[in-house]
Image (tube, rainbow, N blue to C red):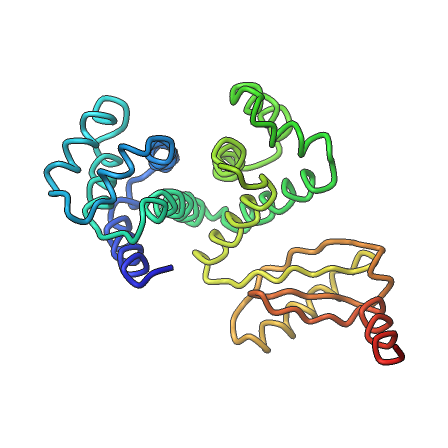
Length: 267
């Protein structure tokens, strides 16, 4: 990510925070929708991300396209967003998505549901990862968006919070050539980042007890100097031991990895 984009993203969060005091999930969905529209229109994306374009021209373009379709607060924020400097048009599109997730996370935190949202996103990701038919149905570009949303609604009705439902729906409809499970994972990490927690993906050969999980969480928190959210996956293929991934770092203590290392040494 270029420095101008990083600086603009930080400035955008600063501009967004005052709006979140009164924001609801409709506001977050509107930010998602604006970002999706910008992503689908190269002409609009070019105008809104052009650093040489006047602010008035960008504001006028937003008003023309979205003025009658979104709330005044969403339009106000979108206007502030496009007036910042972005390295590329895709960076602007990504910013809309990231900030919409940030808004959902803030709303979940205000409602004391952020831990629920983290767990629900991970559980739905696991469901997608474990079902090839579901992966195909949600990733089929020829399928109608309405049909995919209807399937999602059937799967999550009464099982997840409203905040998680917003993110799951957007992960499906806004994947843009990305795997749905990867988008869900990304959203989960962004929610955890809002809560100022790292995400540790723990892979074990057999389920761990609550006491074991507590000890592992405590050890990792001490090692990394902050609290972590544990996402636990069971994979008998690792044979034994444990594999932990935190922020791209892999701590692999599985029997499978030790056997592989031994074979390499003997080769």
